[in-house]
Image (cartoon, rainbow, N blue to C red; front, top):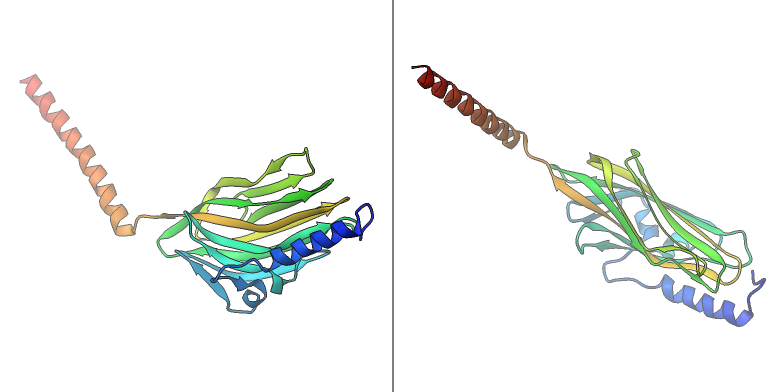
Length: 227
């Protein structure tokens, strides 16, 4: 567990892990509660349900992961916890799954992901890879050991707008000297309202009327010219 790292450093990182694991807002719900059948979180016009979780290595338990609504801009969730891997093992992984469903008359057209992956001391890496079912896109945030690359945000327009999508957030952390840490990550989703059938029909009729009017005017001008 502590190969290549001092006991003092391990103590500091352990204390950091405890602090990060209890970070929460007043509206946060433990992920362990959301794993029960029938549990859901409604954020704006989106419903999040069917939560799953599997963690290995140094990843926190579901009871030590807090889930809070995110409403600044697009709607989403913030997952808070001590997601990490200490040096000396074979790496730590966590997989959080859930379904996102938009309200009637809307579709999910875009997705974004941001967080704060960090490698302490290094070398190491920590990644959150987000995938969707149906396969409408993929996102990733990551941090590699300094001076390696860091990407704290990612976004994509979904290849086809959907009313419901199953999301999988795969967390992978590996540290060979120190720790790879992540205290939170936030997936968000952009909702677009689709025209109601009656409105779409009226719009189509309006466009058709404009086209017919142009044809009639063109014919009248043509007849007047012939006279």
